[in-house]
Length: 174
Image (cartoon, rainbow, N blue to C red; front, side, top):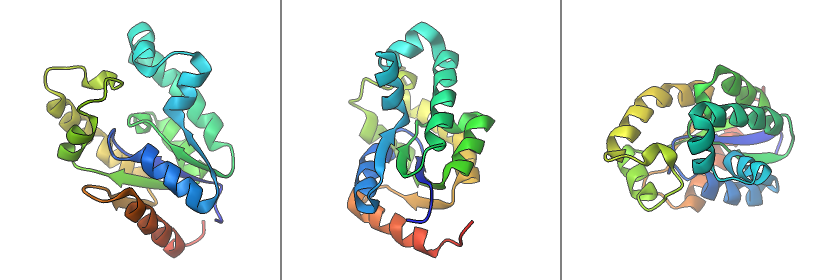
């Protein structure tokens, strides 16, 4: 690969971690998940950080982690769904490597996240409405930072990885 990092963005349930691991193996890069890195360093899970520090506290930690990880080389980085909300993160991501937006429908997100208790923003009576609202705000930001947009609905992760690799080959150097 000719780029510093491959950075995956997209909503929760898009497959960033699953696809990221497979992609990293394929290109022989190290895989890192920014949320998991935060959890390991703090010794606390994301829902606990949200409960104690609020979303603002979590976003501060996330911004520091994104800046650090995007400065490395040879990573496939899976980011959290809300990473694009801060301009500083969008800038770090764009400068950190090639950005791949894994797009998925709200219906697919609901299906993939329905049993996951590690999603603080979905602790609500109507997670579908929350996901729809988040997508309306975040989709334009994902598109703004993306070099490549890949649809993941109903697609096997290995097929998505092959499409990412094919599209990376056709990108002009930057």
